[in-house]
Image (cartoon, rainbow, N blue to C red; front, side):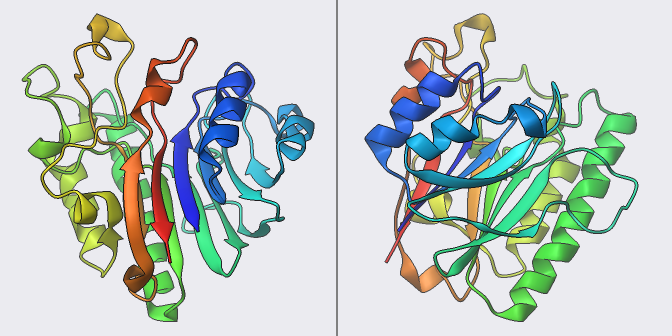
Length: 256
């Protein structure tokens, strides 16, 4: 079983890129982020024609998350992250697919920091950690997939000082991610590739793709009951180099 996460950065604008990747990579389950489309604008017919069922939580112009399943229909279990009934941003969805629970999460960017946006990022992270702890206690097979907007360590960003004030690499952001993993989750890509950066994001600015000036922001965390089934993990880097591409590349795992 192949599970992937992909920040598509506008699903309708980059639909041809997404469909080409689906046909080529044939993932069984896909977590998508940054749909940038209202619920009614989700390209359901094109996704179904490609052989995928889908559930989604859209938001006009911003955010938006979805879960796709190859030759199957995901069963929606949550369409929002618990803990704040006033939060209306479309950043979390959760579904049962082919015997496992999969999330698609889009953690707040948090810039500029310090400030209200960074405070929101940390509050959202705290809510995620609380919910993830409940999933751990339920002892069920879970993949926490998504764009975490955190480069967990200095190894997860190219050699530079230009991002030092960015919310993606702040000590509090990294501490929240570390605390999440410490619950018992396996950071699948880093676990299987401990000595390779495995970047998933290259900003459009300053020729960063050509220079391989990337960050690892997209993660698949595997619950303890699922970890023994972890077989492979990788990043489809060249998807980032295609014409009209998202600034992220798909990250994926294979489970026995």
